[in-house]
Length: 119
Length: 112
Image (cartoon, rainbow over all chains, first blue to last red; front, top):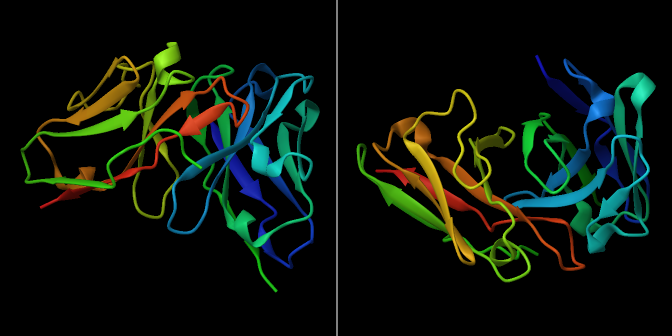
């Protein structure tokens, strides 16, 4: 059974940093592109970033470029999102998702972890 | 910001048919990229409902169907049931610089 479990969310002050993790199991992690998608309270879904199987390609939505870094450790079956210079508008539930292929759909999602940026 | 536009809400009585539109542009749906649909029940993660414009993953009832034409796509729910009350999002790929994956604005389906 495919499982994605996010962790690392919490309350952080504006300008602060946070590192999210996603532990994957039930599939060959190193064979799939992986994404982070977020959802602000009461709002819609927004794709944040994704990363190729070997980590050699990474893509970001404009609003997080230069502040967020996606990475992975295939030996640990883990996906990460390093978030720096956080802003109030980054407040959201962050989901880890497995891409079926680059540019395609996400067939599996984690339960999400809440990040709150507030003073 | 979302580049795929959906109606904020649709509603129908049990057993009825409802449709949700998803309007894009020449850089996403109109460019030939596939459209996918997700269902999000309250307080839960999104669930893949339709992939590749009209394909259902295993376990998704055939009451759900998808189609695509030009710069738009649609999700239809026939034989509406109480458990279909949820938020629905379309998603595609966008060739512009703003982002690779784009989601629709989301539609709340209410079963009357």
